[in-house]
Image (cartoon, rainbow, N blue to C red):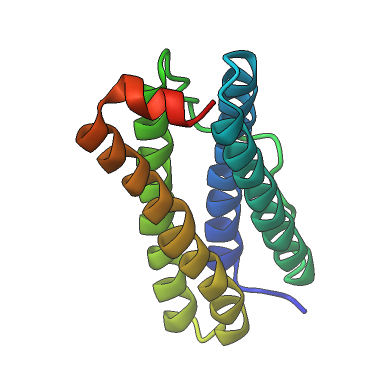
Length: 155
């Protein structure tokens, strides 16, 4: 089915964001593993898998719309040098993903591509209610109990 070129371009923009997040989560999860922060490693490795699933769904939709997935593009990675920075950088990336998802969902509605919109809604829900929420919780917890206590609880 030939899709709208604006929608396909927007889906490729979302794909770039998901692939960027995937790379950033992979690096951060390996850093947590190296630092023996096993709980953070496990959670961020899970986030990596979520981003991979999002990227896969976007690729499938682009192909269905007879577009060409751009799997080479990435935004700049924001690799932190400590846990607080890493969590904040991941949160900033997720905020960007939420903003872009909302814009593309609105574009899909404008172009009357309701199937693509429906495919994007679960990605938005998961990003807002899982990824963003969890990262906000972690940073709040660090503020409440202090960085050292937080790090100890993540071992």
